[in-house]
Length: 174
Image: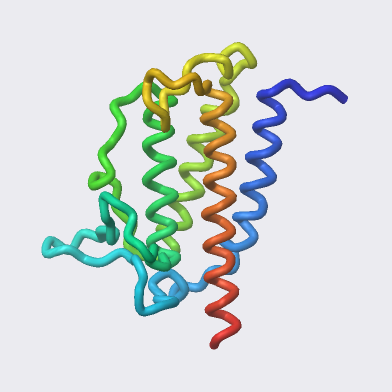
């Protein structure tokens, strides 16, 4: 069987998502805001009651350990902006993308982004994959849409592994 590049990238995404879903199905409400270390990034209420992520324009050294809530916001942020670019909509600013406020809503949000991303993937042709990538690289980059799709798959797998490791660590330390 011969796969075209679109089919291969879609297969890779589906595999990545299945590995992520394994952890999403097992998350408990208290997992999301559990702080695994004293030096961590999480999401917090601002004065208006909106959930905002800890953030620094320059990555600190040492890098804070993120909570599952922070990671789920992070996935929602980069994926929402990628979808905005892919759909040729004005991309939202980081501060416009907020964490939904609880674990169940966060998982629903991520699953909704999956559905939106599948719609993007389903309409791509092999020729589309050769177009210049709208994100996350500078406009003068030589990266293509194929690179962008592969980046989404890789970034999602990395974040899924981080969430899975935090979930397992919390469960083992209980």
